[in-house]
Image 1 (cartoon, rainbow, N blue to C red):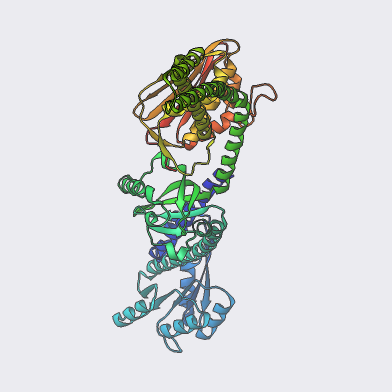
Image 2 (cartoon, one colour):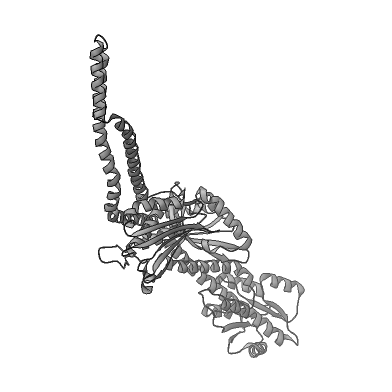
Length: 585
């Protein structure tokens, strides 16, 4: 649901930016021809009206009826309705009954002049009234005055009046219609912007936008909830100084520098999971999707973040449950592995108990000799020494002295073996690591092999071909789980006797682990579903169907890959690739 919602929100944000750009550029359209405005609107993607009705109403005021009829014949058409008004007193009635788009009138009127009349009409009807002055005698002073007041044109009645009036009226009406389109456009943009802003502010995902330098320029309500900062306190601040954890700041700064140069984001930064810093200093796991919005002057980065704390917690619980189930299946083997060293340590302790009894007897007899030295005669002393010598020979004292060292060594070796098994189990069972650590993948494999050895040793020959590989930053306990799952699956795939080969190597990008078996293989139709939760090819009761699904998720968390190649009756190879740069936790 989250992934599907992101393109919708990104589209909404682009539309919101378009609204902003149109709003900023609206002033530049004032006075532009209607055809230019319509062309611009038709080329846009804004969800606004694309056209307006072009019919217009022109009111002509002139006390010369012959002149009125001329004007009517010049201007009347299917798109233009011409109203004739010989008296000033009738002008107000026309304006109150309909929308007059253009007023054409003489400068000198029976009652005052044209500017006074226009000012009264604009004051009463509270709108700007386009008008053209047509006069018998031109005056430069009056022309300047009326043009300053906003007249569309100032014409003198001469031989070219018809042509000039038609051009002036058409131009004025085009500007009227252009302004009407812009007014409607602004109204619809305002409504759309409000709806868009409402959608973004009620979205469950946090929305943040930054410029190329990392300065925060937008921050919705969900961002306030997830990160703890209110919009007014964080807009204008740099993202690296607020919600980016300290260990990521250098990396984010480098990415921003690259973005300033190229105005592009690498594919790895388009959609990924990371952690962000809350206002109270707590780290929040988030799924982040980034996008670039191209503007003329600059480009900005928009990000939609989803709090995945609950998901991470559930994943951890699921991994732990599956791991405990796996350990339960391995319990008998692990118990056997522990029982062997414990058995001979117990036997050695019993033998040592007998040896100690002999040593104690010899010591007691030697004590009696020491006491006899205090006053006994030589014959008595010799008799006791003979008794000690006979007892030591009877108990094979010299052998005991040699054997006791071997018993202690064996017992120590057995206890060390038990300790290693317990430590491996403890390491293997640890999946709730809060932070990553540097780890040697070879050592992880060795520890896991010891845990699962009893599952392997009876019907499999294990070949370990470990190459020289660098340590990487990872979650070792989780990778142990992946390796255990692959090793146990390989062992179960071998029916009677076979070979499992574990190899490691590194190239310039990845540490590569391959686990290969020569078992029964996997049918081609099953391979696409191998990593699907609850899918299993094992008999009922033999598998949960979660092992490979969880393994796949763990490798993805490490920004790596897990691949499978298999051929029926010939075997299967799983290849795990882990990036050398590791993963931050």
